[in-house]
Image 1 (cartoon, rainbow, N blue to C red):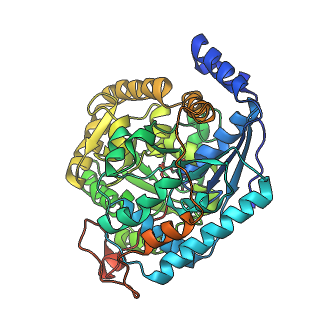
Image 2 (cartoon, protein in one colour):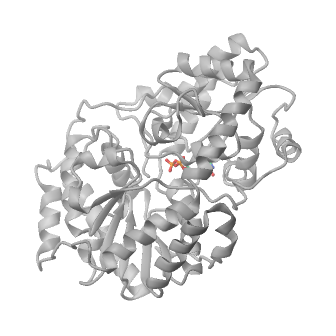
Image 3 (cartoon, protein in one colour):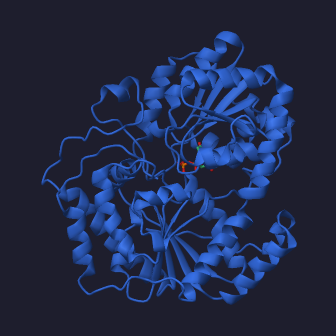
Length: 468
Ligand code: UDP
């Protein structure tokens, strides 16, 4: 478990991105919060969207005088296998959890709370990201107020996981989700807010990369830049439907024979222990077709400039998810002027206006059609790409997320939000709620919707899936 080293970044650098009144509001709200001790806690320092956000957001908060820190949990695969099931349950996949699983979860959260207090002393506000560290506030000393920032697609959760996790919201001053629709899962209405994540345009991943440099990087990885390329950048995760991307590519290739596909997904997210299994399944599904390039190496997917190069130099970027809390990969590609072909779900719907700045699709056939449409009509693709970039500029850049967060902190600090009262036996009560109706051994899986899986993974009774 550990503190992640983060710099302090001066806010001036971001001022060119925002209007004068927004700048003024950020500065004045930050001034009123100077010295506020905030700890962000999550499950992994690398890999996935939460780490991506915190790497920029925490330094920006520090640059404005907030005493912000980032702490990431370290645990073994056993714990992350449990939390992956919780994550999958929240996204709608029935799961099986036994008493030992819940006790493992509870123990790690207790240790995490103690490690956080040892590392930072008393915090005014703890922001716990996603389910892995959701029980931490149950163990914090009185006085720290907590925000649960859930980045997951909560459209249709599995009932058992929903029933076990939601009692933990009693510890939170606020629950924060990416879209208002997610609150319907049963979050306390008077203590739930919704605002979407954002990207940092100044990171190596998102700053302007000349096309020639992007192409040179891709050429070094075996891509023929004279021929069209469609790319999906994502962890290897069933919810991202990499098999469906291969299907769509194969259908599109019938119409565009020289088409190439890149699937970029570094196996760097510590909280995603089954990424390797999905990667092997997808690799076997792609059956060594020479124009399908699958990259799982950290030096490709973990290198920000290389990810930038794929998003910049691809003719079409796809994000064919079947569940997606928000989808930073969509935002990143749109910022590079790409009309993204995205799965019609969750946060992708928030970003893509179908036919205006990208396309929403519901299956591989639709996905293939939209890929071909964009390749056939580069002028239209350019116009949609320009609309995509503009919508990210208006809605999904870091200063907006920073301001939303600062306003939330201000509400909490100034007591406009009630923190539920903790009672002395609250930990015991929450644990009891999580254990309620649990069998002592693993139960049969519930027949709820699961992400599609193929090949080796599909043959397995329990499809792998991810942890945030
Ligand atoms: N990402 C990356 N390399 C990869 C795969 C993903 O850098 O090989 C990054 C991606 O650019 C994005 C984040 O990981 O910034 C994924 O965030 P998103 O919200 O799309 O999905 P999540 O992984 O959080 O479900």
